[in-house]
Image (cartoon, rainbow, N blue to C red):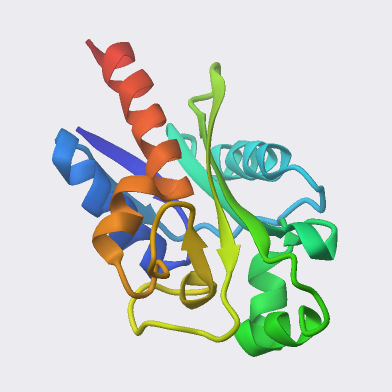
Length: 184
């Protein structure tokens, strides 16, 4: 089963295909830049994005939006995660957290699907903590800073754990479950 996936992030494509492969689903990357609505809700951002992409390509498609929500920073960077990462990176986030012992954070992901009739979104999240310094060479974005609850390593250190428990993994699996039943 093939699903069109609108994103410019090759890392996301590899990640969702790694997950989808277990279920016989292939996500085919579509290059169709879309304006990201400014909202504190990942669902709103993903849903508006998928409607925009569908209007451009006229085919059923998915869009994914995700963010890192850090409790001590009032859920910053949240839906602005990619922009903030491009400006200040992991060391900038750690600098913002210099004076706090509260390291609690949550990664959230929303996969939104639209086929011209049905708009459906699937949210996944994982709670954890922000490290004192980056650790690990794998993954991308904030992976070297995030240790999921119950694990002793960052997502960048342990890709197998990330594949099983990540926010994106949970959202993708929810989507695949729904989409497979729709196609049956």
